[in-house]
Image (tube, rainbow over all chains, first blue to last red; front, side):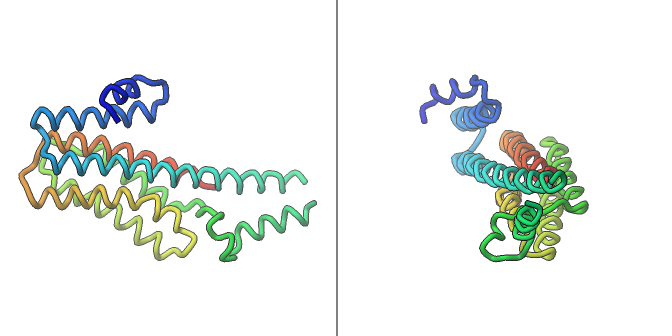
Length: 78
Length: 129
């Protein structure tokens, strides 16, 4: 993904995407300025990838919880 | 209709292998408290202080949470999957703090990521039925 695309995403109205893009930009810029080694930058990028995995699992849990809650609520009124 | 709903509930909360993946883990006071402790520890990371000790604090909190969850049983698979990325992030941080002198820039970015990861995980754990 190009830096231009990241800058655009950093300003989008989806908070999670904007945050993720901003973090990516920060890592790239700090590396370019010599404040992060290549290994450090790669590790932090991998951390961002893991955030996507975490988000997916959290979303799955939320959906399953909503299902259980809905079924329980229906059972109370029937 | 009541019978149908009861049957659905029974399936959802049962240990039936085919539907275990559909059943989330349920609210647990200890897990809820510990995930908040983890989120607080991440927020308290101070990059002006030695990083190794702070990484160890997070590792200890996370280890307690995961060992407790593992011992609690198979239905805790979701929270273990949820916290695995955090464990890997913290382990990488620990490894780096033992391999090289502290880099404040690295720490600031690592902190930002850990705060976001632990916040998301805490929301998921605290949002359970």
